[in-house]
Length: 295
Image (cartoon, rainbow, N blue to C red; front, side, top):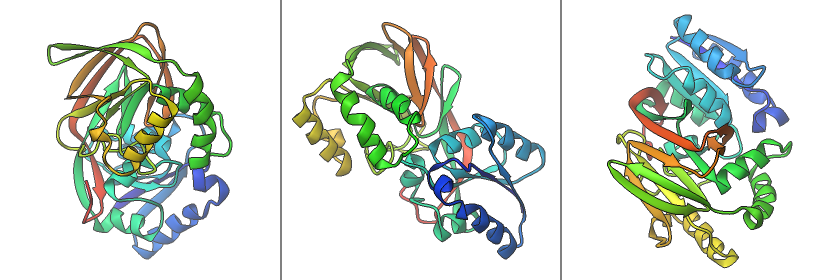
């Protein structure tokens, strides 16, 4: 099997301890693979490297990095026959955790060869691909602030999240879906492909990667104690029981905001227009998952 590993030296664990690069070298030798390792050098380089891997005839292309690296590499593989592999080593690892690939290590590497393939849906918003989630409002504000941090991880989210919670204001959004129109004042709004943001914060319990639909979840402004209650729900897989939350399900959404602004795709901030057009590409990415996977 011809394999290409795409390693991001600046992602989470890799920045502090690049042992996964050496682990990938050992894995290639131990499994006697026709494998190579390349390193990302700039933003969006992962997409270029993934497309090059496909052109070179690689059957398996593996991202070693966080959610941003996952997004870039997967973007280069959508609609191809190449299999996508994930060694998650970032701050949230939302897609990996949803699939049961919770961290880097022997289990994640074994999944590349001994797991099973899953044909998953993918999404596009205003030309930006996403695979786990996209969102606007508070969570996009967090993504912008978090991208400027040097020390990340869960504590990094908390550090930027608390001041943003008290300063961020809801956005009036009009959502068009399947001929229906819904207005909402969204403090934060997510369109989910998987069930969670990352760190086991499950905002869309029951969401699946291959069911041909997204779950739109819009949360209004709540007070501090209300937010604490929602955080508890996120961590206990019961967020769908919060009555104040608006939920819609579908393969296409058009969201109209009052003005252009930030969104995020898999945690990466993007500046874009007031109108957001979101579409689903059914089962357009082939990914290796554990033989027994929650997905």
